[in-house]
Image 1: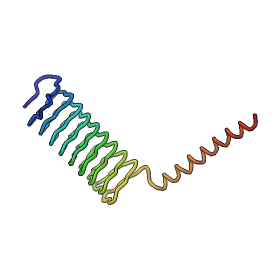
Image 2: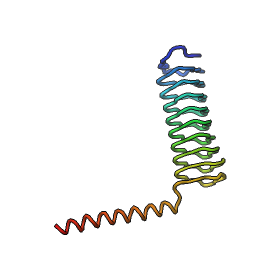
Image 3: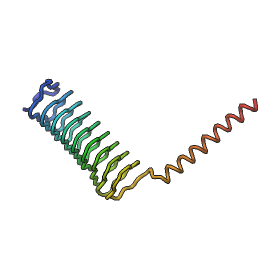
Image 4: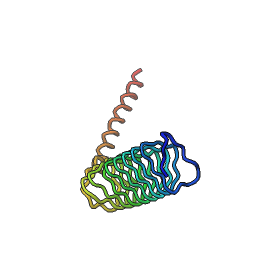
Length: 175
């Protein structure tokens, strides 16, 4: 089935296949969703394939995004090529792009950035992240936050708090 109108709100029954090109939809419920230069607020599907598209929230078995933007992805398998995602929760992720938060069993990243990565396994090349929690790492990772910097930040914050609190107490007693 192909959508021909500019703005579509799909019916509540599940569609077998939905192909969207230069279209937008509020809610999509289908077995297979193929998007090209399209947008959808909410997608529930077994398989989602999106190219140059925007997806607000999706729940699926498999999602493959190429040069697209997604807000929240919950899937068994997620693949992203040169895209951006806010949050990805998945069993297995293959990512090339930028992700805000990645929570997965297995993550394979290639020249990617992520704010937070929480995973059982992380594989890949040239990963940049702010915060990383993983059982097993097989990738060169550049992290901003590491145990040493956390300790330094905590010490500096405690010192500043103590100085400011002490000054306010001292000024109060002088009155």
